[in-house]
Length: 114
Image (cartoon, rainbow, N blue to C red):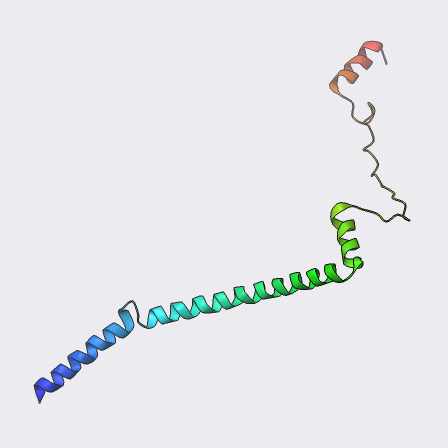
């Protein structure tokens, strides 16, 4: 009877070792669950992107409003009855000598007698 108990205990220890420490054990299952969750998140974001692209394709096929918007934004095009005005920011004001006197200006004034 003691031999049977020892054999069963040995079998139990070996099975537990395989369950917890082997390549196809609990650790591997948990790692695979994490990978599946990460892949599902990536799939959800890609599905949303695909939905947006499909809606854009549908808009481009159905009407000219989306096509016109795309031409305006990407190509800078204007309609035939519009006037294009380009607003240019003012250039920086040139620096004057009185705003930032250099070392030579001080010497020239001293030579001039002023």
